[in-house]
Image (tube, rainbow, N blue to C red; front, side, top):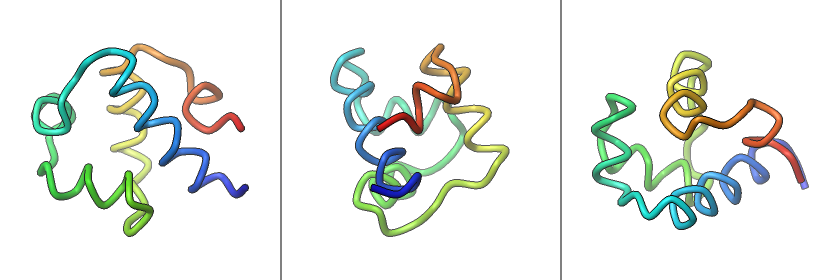
Length: 68
């Protein structure tokens, strides 16, 4: 698996685990819900600034976000 695939799978996992909807997560990160959907479906990669926001919102490490 590559990092982007790991990111997408882990993002989906943490949203489910933390019971956060894609819409609510998008609001917290400051992006559209469509953007979050594209991340999960591996259609679009997040920017570095969005990755920083993602790990802050989920309260996880960068390694947690991209680990296999």
